[in-house]
Image (cartoon, rainbow, N blue to C red; front, side):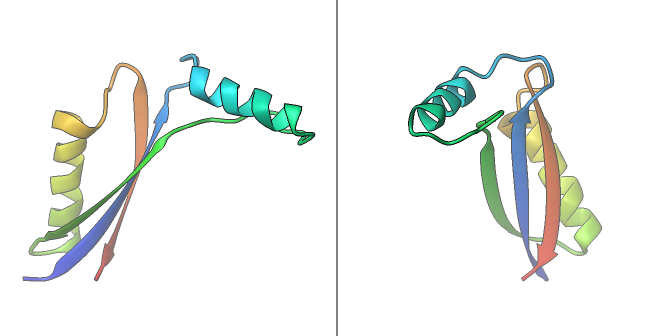
Length: 83
């Protein structure tokens, strides 16, 4: 069965406060960098086997909805690549 690597980029929804991002932005400004905005998110990499790229993508969407992403606070972007 083919192997795939999925990259799931998770970020806070628009309007949700990002205290970690604000702390990093403040530190960057303190160091003299002109960071207008900083967002802190997560990158999850999942290696899996599936019958097709569509099956792999569907499986990772299910993982995201059931465990990996909080739909109240977070959105995500998914990319699936053959290995």
